[in-house]
Image 1 (cartoon, helix red, strand yellow):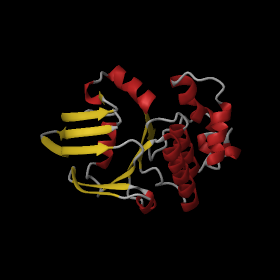
Image 2 (cartoon, helix red, strand yellow; image 1 turned 30 degrees about the vertical axis):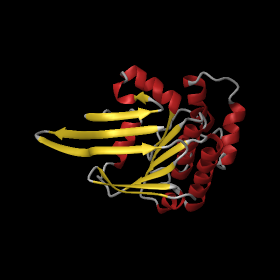
Image 3 (cartoon, one colour; image 1 turned 180 degrees about the vertical axis):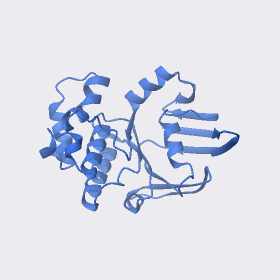
Image 4 (cartoon, helix red, strand yellow; image 1 turned 90 degrees about the vertical axis):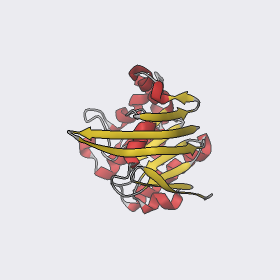
Length: 226
């Protein structure tokens, strides 16, 4: 599914160059439920952004289902993200002028051009316990509710891969449990691949594979069935 070879990424600020990812190799199979962990600054979020075509490496190759995404144009990258990838960010990225329904329905109707989407949106809202908030706006929701909407928006298009940067950081224990249960269901039903950047012990406990980064390199890779 994902094959990463000799990946390097640096950022330059003034005269100082900081290497974030160093000659990283990683293979991820379809349907894995994987957590990327490590201290702040270890390269977790940068690696997610590179896999998600939100940033480009200085060197190396990222193959996703046979496509080298490092060679795609900006337009091709945008299309690839829309068709294959789902994103969940810590800061929600909801459209403030859209209702909960409209935020979740947006990628279905606008990007994938699907019609008659209400039943699908209502189903996923029910699964995460948000049915009563369907017509509310983001400024009427708590932080945890906003994150659940962001999760639902990523899952509703049934992408091959979901990249999640601290997706449970703003959730209470019960909400986090519901979200993780929904993700596990998606993994089993559709063989969706989940890759998390996280410090959350709740995610680490359900992850089938934990990859530990330190200074931009993999220092530990454990895999077990759960």
